[in-house]
Amino acid sequence: MLHTTRMARHAAPALSVWRDMSLSTLTAGVVAVIIGYASSAAIIFQAAAAAGASPEQIASWLWALGIGMGITSLGLSLRYRIPVLTAWSTPGAALLATSLPGIPIEEAIGAFLFSAALITLCGVTGLFEKLIQRIPPAIAAAMLAGVLLRFGLDLFVALESQLWLPLAMCAAWLAGRRLWPRLAIPGVLIVGCATAALQGLVSLEGLQLTPTVPVFTTPAFSMATLIGVGIPLFVVTMATQNLPGLAVLQAAGYRPPSSALIGWTGASTLALAPFGGYALNLAAISAAVCLGPESHQDPARRYTAGVAAGVGYLLMGVFGATVTTLFMALPAALVMALAGLALLGTLGSGLASALVPSEGRDAALVTFLMTASGISLLGIGAAFWGLVAGMLTLWVTCGRR
Image (cartoon, rainbow, N blue to C red; front, side):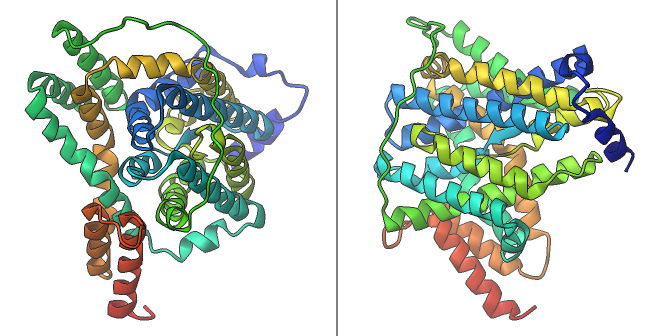
């Protein structure tokens, strides 16, 4: 309760953000932005490419996500005087990368709007906790693990095309996990880019620091896409992103208004979905950088780290075209290895959460295998059928328990 009391005192309008800002909170905000982009921008690139997006549309996706994260992180941190960081849904991007091939990009945008509407409804009505509680955590974790399995396999598939590049990145990851866990993925990116450059695999011709022009895509709505992409995107974002995001804030001693935060992230996604902003949610991993004493000894002044991160996200969003050009210049093996290494921790956590409980393990295993199979039935993707098969198995084997 100490955090809450001191936080209320610092929430007085008379206090200036500049007075509360410090070098440590500024640094924490910048590091959070770097971790967020370096760890999963490659997955966003893969998701947009799977939807058949053009280079201009991919740049627009990164613009929408950066602008959305910047506005929500900046605005919510200032409004509630707590370090609220938002992020794109990394598991959601992984889901899209496996579910969108063959689906028109207009229908993908429609699924984004549908998922965002469900998230906004949960926030506005306060149904967030009640709705998510209907889906057992083990089932949601198993669906997430099934979605991410392909990325873990691609990490080793990349060895066939470029042996030394993935090996160097794996070595950097092992060293990072031992010596600097928080910066392991940015270190992998640096080593990967350096190795690719030494091998002559990177071409930076045409790379310019130019602002992004957002591209509006008119949405189209297909029942099969809404069910097969929109509902799994909603479940993954809420169960594996927003819930941990709230838990991280609460573990740090803050008492965030959960319904308001969920509602604002959903509304922001609704506004930005036609430009490629597929899902915004509360951050967990990058937010942890801004929530500890390393950010600031006074918990009531740590909100300025969220402000700094918001400004950084806005800058990254404005120059989304430059980020897109940079990733298009990188070899495919580097992008595959980076995505696989970045998602190893999430894949491991998903498997552990799904299979550790003995009761319902069969249902979790069915969910995992059905989702990982990548099948499409009646035009609906595997993630939805994995959820359905898991819930049915759970109901038959465990009944009312």
